Image (cartoon, rainbow, N blue to C red):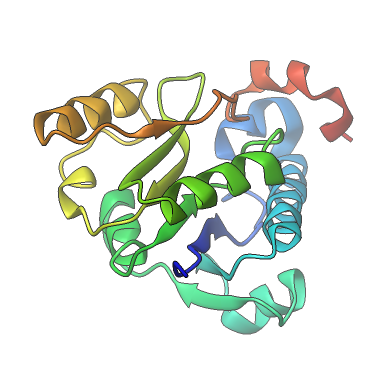
Length: 196
């Protein structure tokens, strides 16, 4: 029986002025932080509904603050130092693992379950492509630290570079459906119900 993958959510504490900063011009610092709070809670709800083991990689708040916010039923691990790639590589050091961000409102148990099933079936890599050229989900059945090195995080090139690196090593990833993430003010129009 294959080991089920661990779901890992990367998120920061919803402090006004530090969370979802690209949305501050539209929502204000408090509104952007409140939206980040709702998105993280929504993602964690999806993770809980999947029934898979899970942890939250945290930054910007104490363990007690995160536990009071997200609950004491989830493992909390500080993200540590380094760029996003270094932090992701640490979280992915013990596969199978599925890495998730908190800014994809349409993420559901369907995508998480499909990633877990692919990894349990022997896939080395599962990718949930984001419409902006990145990815919203990365599932790994093997330790592949070179996926995280020297990457222009936060740009539209991330997915293309990732695919080139995999192809160069003869790895064909399982691709899930593309979803949009919520990063910029114009993205708010897609999910008016989130903009309270």
